[in-house]
Length: 574
Image 1 (spheres, rainbow, N blue to C red):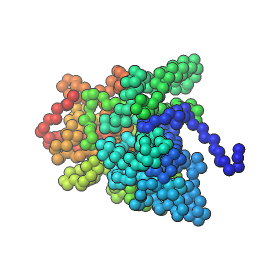
Image 2: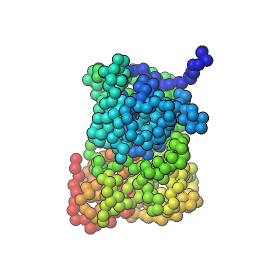
Image 3: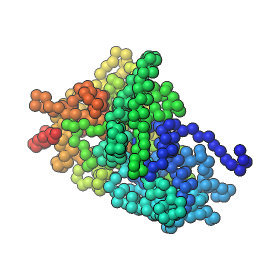
Image 4: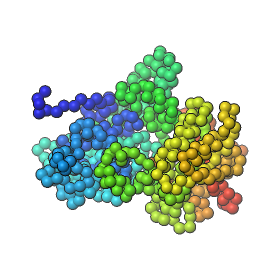
């Protein structure tokens, strides 16, 4: 090797290799956790820097805080692996500067940049320009766009504000240049599996699989996911013959949905942690299977394609969900104080959350399940994060976070682990008061312990410095029919005596998945949740309803009495 040449060996998994080998202008990457999405963002930025010097790549995000805490830390970890170094003003060496004017002597982008406040600029003049939908949404004319966490975008707003800026430098990199760049004016969208109707635009591009090759991509993919579950069980049971048979069938099915670029230059790719098994190992997957609740494992790790069921118990729609609640002012100050330390920015806590009032108590509720335990964190407010205005004379009930642990053994460890997750995340919350809404089943005595689940949880909270105010609903479990009527009243938003209900859809993903996949059925003239076992491929397992149950308990305890004064009946809408 020549002394002036620098080389670095980087190992990529099959999904990453396939992605980089396929020349596509528009790319939709729907990958699960542990698959290597952060590599893709870093590789895309590196390619743009090299292929389009003095060009502009926009990084469109829902919020500035999201970019600083989620996307950029992993992106620059990847770029530093490739050899990129942050500019050091003392030694006057390095490859990029963050949110400041580039040093003298560096190239500047072809597009005139009025302010570098939202830019990461490279020494060859390429600019990574951060666009956010909550403020800085209109940037300079750009050559490419990358969007991570794309499921949090408002697609209509993106099409109106960001997409039109992707139009610059046709004479430098586009059709008017001497050597056109194939990806010029393209997009890369990266996301975990979309789970809400307004996010389904990310799955729409996959239609070309069926249109061009007759491939039923999502049906085959979900069959593979369910085979992966069988594969894991076979491995845990030591059934090597079954493992080999299932593994071979997974390979056969995956070959039938091999990714390809559409005739118009679009690439859509699904991948799961099994695409990265050479790096993470089978034991890691088994460990995640053991500690994660099944619903979240299927979606978060195996990338199960999920859709909302018909005849849903909860009538949740876009009025009730918000995605953009990062405390950008705090995050920006924190970033500047730490000199944009990507490592520290990636360590999230409640200070980064705009919907968490540090001076008020937190409301928590549990569902102590047989397979897993679930926790909701809520906080009432007078601010509507969906419509972005203060509400006068009416409570806004915000579900702001969720936690869960899986219980493999009947001991106290999982209860403490769940409480510890909460306490760690809210360790900087000044008002150390929780309003504890008890799960009545958690009061039951167990043969192998002198304390109940609730007693253990309260003791753990108090040990970590929290004052616990306890509340209990009537009866062992909220009545299904009355609870259905209560939710109907709340979600209709027509009676001012009932609160406005809002969910942080970024933090409370599995609560919403659970609620959107809970069927309602009518029996003996009354409505109840349909908790019968899975009956077809589109319905998740029974345990999918548990996160919805935990939200029910707190809502019923706080607002159930309002039904007594309600004279109107809200019929079910099927």
